[in-house]
Image (tube, rainbow, N blue to C red):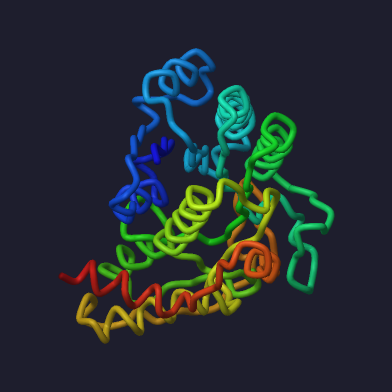
Amino acid sequence: MRVLITGAQGQVGQELIRLAPADFTIMGFGSNELDISNPRQVVSRIGEFKPQLIINAAAYTAVDKAETDSERAYAVNAKGAENLAASAAALGIPLLHISTDYVFSGDASAPYKETDSTGPTGVYGASKLAGELAVAKQCAQHVIMRTSWVFGAQGNNFLKTMLRLAQTRDVLSVVADQHGCPTSAASIAKALWSLASHYRNNGNLNWGTYHFSNTPATTWHGFAEEIFSQAVALKILAKASQVNPISTQDYPTPARRPAWSVMDCSLIEEKLSITQSDWRDELREMLKEMAI
């Protein structure tokens, strides 16, 4: 099966390339090779490669910058998703699309279900929600996978930031009142390839919107402490920085972060047989690879 991957230079995109099963023929495009906000480029690239399935890992993910760069955020996250969905529909092929917990307000206290009301509080979340709506409208054969707190060995993310800061700071202050589930880019890639394999073998999937993250829930403060603990154990860091808990109010940002990003992932297991892994195990494997 021929699979076209957008956002191939991003965290998840690189893992999709690295973990691609041998029996798939893949073509990965970074944003410098395929700007998904450009409909002509989308039609041209897809026409050249003639994929049988598209995985969209491209996104504008600069959450704070999006507040003053909304035009570009919507161009990529909304219009870009729409362009891919329209092309997929025209060819009669599926689109697997990655979305985010930021489509919710973050005001809940129980894990979000797919049927819960959305209510993004910033441009990033709003643009991603617009992308979801466009995908669902344009392409009947779609899976929208909402995920959260993505970390990986590649790209910019919380894990990489903590490891970098620990090199020069003995004490760090990290937000302790935002709750969510760290999710490795590798586990997202594996889940997407599992869906692609199922579609190739069966010619169908239970299309729709699903939640996928690693487990269990934690805070950014708890995530940081675990990063340092494992990094020291694996001798990536000589010693762990002290991590002091602070509130969201103590660390103001241009975009409001959800206080609650925990999602109920039971539906994707029930309908698509995708199970959650422990992010601490995912972190350990990733750090081991980084230490080699």
